[in-house]
Image 1 (cartoon, rainbow, N blue to C red):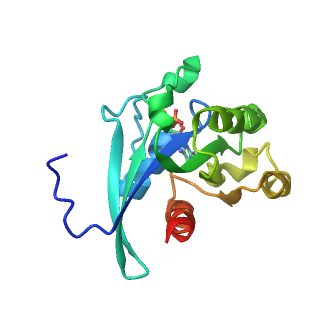
Image 2: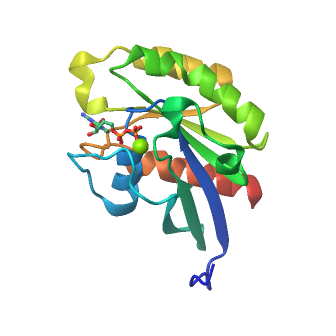
Length: 177
Ligand code: GDP
Ligand code: MG
């Protein structure tokens, strides 16, 4: 890659999935750049962003893939999932349908991703709890049944964004180290 990957102990590929509009790109933006763009474009123009963190005295580089809106047409290719060790599966707590589609996304992962992939279910837009359509307990129970990690977060006010990504990353790390 011609990149300065010296000093990196581990590199993990992670993928962002979930319905269009749930806030995947903004979550990634918040985590990597600590930014939220009011005028969010569906495409951020790159295939992935990277963030390097120190974990357990090891330098861990996360390469996190985002879609350019292909999820709208169910056109995410196998290449997107290839080699991914973690998935951040997002829904919008104010959009019941986006939660009902989580099962469809899990099926996508079963078909295309490694069977040991670690999944963090993220209920995004927790800042909009006044118009919530998905109760926390319902999502939590679902996650438990399906063996997923779970957290509610907000890319807008930053709440739990770090915990969601770092939580996923540390589970991936635990799995390989
Ligand atoms: P994606 O299609 O899943 O990548 O979704 P985007 O990141 O493009 O976000 C879709 C829309 O939801 C945009 O209008 C964002 O500004 C908005 N959005 C994303 N995250 C949040 C959040 O945490 N809170 C609120 N209130 N809006 C958000
Ligand atoms: Mg997006």
